[in-house]
Image (cartoon, rainbow, N blue to C red; front, top):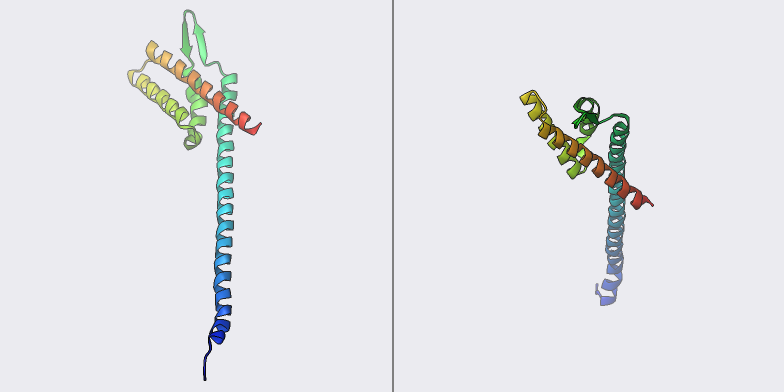
Length: 153
């Protein structure tokens, strides 16, 4: 039996078609999976951001309900009791969601409070640092909420 090039070409065309079809299917599925993965990542980031914004909104609500700067004559005192009872638990409920600058400031406040507890009194310098850090936290939160609103607008 004699083989000709025409027979070889005709018999290899289906094999070539299967190979090209397989490659095209692989590329299409790969592209679809990448798009789906990117959508899932974006959806997860969005849900995480919403959760973070809920924490920030709760902090602002508490800040409006509690007097954090108590004026006692010539001095302004930080309301440590309200901070430790109300605010701190909200910050640490989902601490991992906080923006890094906010988390650093919260940890700095914790260190100041720990030092004051160790010394069994809140020194004026520590009180001023707590007031400044708390105001810094509120400003940071307001900045992030403003950025979120601008992005959504």
